[in-house]
Length: 299
Image (cartoon, rainbow, N blue to C red):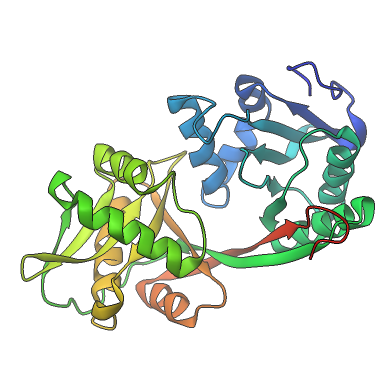
């Protein structure tokens, strides 16, 4: 990689340049990421975390970065924080296939999957399967929403409040409940996730009868956008409007702070998609994630 002794430097194949240097990556691709903060929300919050908390934030394996160059612009970027799959941000299908070729030819650490907008993710996955013989399986499809005009729902009993240290046990239990519901790893484990959220005051609760009944979490602001994550109500309390109430409260606070509010949903979940549309969230883009077989015979 450029910047860490790897093979790709100026004039790298297919227009892709790679580096292990976060500073070099942000100097080249930072303006591109910040140009569309709502669309690039995940890459912005991940790189912000790496800047603030160090390159070992996600594990011992160092992150990989890259960007695709076109005349006068950077139209795409690569953000790879093992053990998580790489993220391809922006670009077209040709750039996605080019990145798959670059990574396949580079050898070394092989990606276990890819996450990108639907068309680019499919192009990368198809090219990776062709080059390596390793099967590509789509594991998730999600939709990114951006808040337009907020429509507050009829509020259920109770009130919103910020989570405090006394809520830690509940938060850790709900973290695990949310992760089980969506089938994904959330944060860095329940305790570390709660530590980070409590430290920045980013966890909002709905409380009814003196007890927390739902939560929604805000990422730190990044280039003018804040992403709402981990919206959760315990199963026995669902259907009472708590999730909509706490999400609307947090959304209003984000907008009042001068930022855009964005969030992701599982595209296949009509309940969550319907809820956020009723609150005033508008679809912005669809994303997909693929997993790759460990060997050519793996499913």
